[in-house]
Length: 285
Image 1: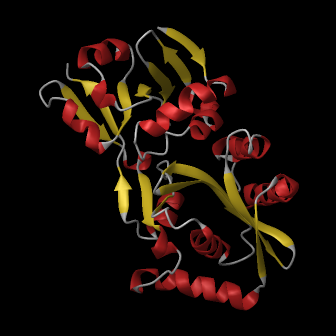
Image 2: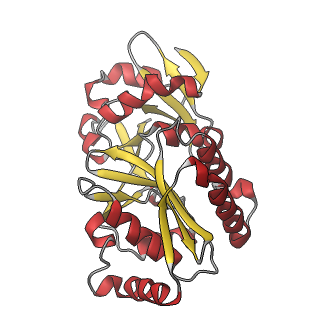
């Protein structure tokens, strides 16, 4: 098995395979793999038959990840490839059937799970569960006159200004947040085929969203950053972005909470329509 670190050279090799896997999990995205390659120590494993990604989870466990639909692989070949790693990950729930109960352990970490929302729900904030979000949106619009633009190269310096302010607001070390992957996303925005929006309040750069299509019906938000001083900024950005997305995107993927309580509370507060579990598959000893 040939092993090499993930680089931009692997984009053409992987981007099509990942989409054809039909896995809706946020890891099955080349921009995510590349931008978080250092955090997860991602490597590409290749032989004459298949391509895998090797990496480490946030809790320090080693894994291999298929880059296509795992159900077409021979189980014995898969086990041989996975030898020396803690588990196979992330495995979508619909793939679990290929792993016999008597041979494999199947577990998941709540912090790995992706939060999925219906786009029309975020675009309206209808219903009693989202009444608080609607109120924050209305308060924001009563206080400010926001402007929204596509995030393009001529506005990247404004996005960098927002990222710096956000990092100051969270009060953590840059290495403890996604500051560096986000900053690199600005530099490789076109090369990674990302898209997003940037928002201004009274002509001041105030927030941005960056994401990409996961499949024909789902759009993933890789980064969403806003200045804390503008109360209701996130509620406005999510609502506006959901309204301008092409109608074919029925779902928004807000990705995982990484086991961080603040992220868990924030993402849960929008009441996800689905939570996509990412299973860890290991051989029973």
